[in-house]
Length: 231
Image 1 (cartoon, rainbow, N blue to C red):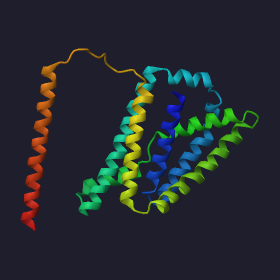
Image 2 (spheres, rainbow, N blue to C red):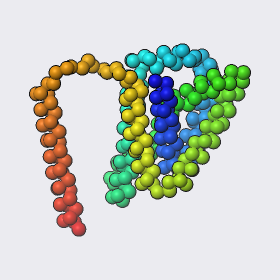
Image 3 (cartoon, one colour):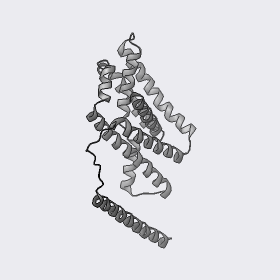
Image 4 (cartoon, rainbow, N blue to C red):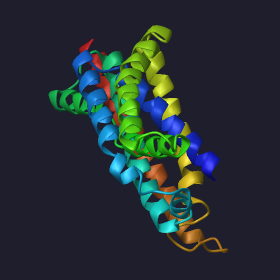
């Protein structure tokens, strides 16, 4: 379980750094400074934690379900950014409200990086028991403010094509979602399952899906016809 959560945190960190490769220099610096200050000031709370307490948190179904909700919301936000960025690149222009929403999504760094940084700080404090806690925290803060811009720069150099980076960000978030389902839910569900199939409910869902697909195809056909008419 701990290994799975570690892999999940690595995916969150990679997704966060990759997301910064789409931002401007001043936003990357501001986000890096915020993450570094959070890391440096978290040491009083970090030293109160213990490995047994962390294991207890990971085994708490209610806490893991709450974490799954936060994880799902952030993944939806990041995937929405990828889709809007692709649409903007393909169409070349969008309504003003979509442009504003796209900029907000691009600037949104994500909130899951803060629990990841806090967990890394706790691990660092456990790994260096003889070192001053405050010094450990601020060394890690300095590493954070250095690694985030460098990581974003390396992603830009390694994958200069924006479309490819968007695909990579999309894939990372899908992987995060898959690992998050296993790592946070941990066999627990919000409602009790049933062994029998409710065929009427299944038929209703199928009809709703087909109706939605038909409406979407009709709307696409109308837009395509208008576009061809304008041309």
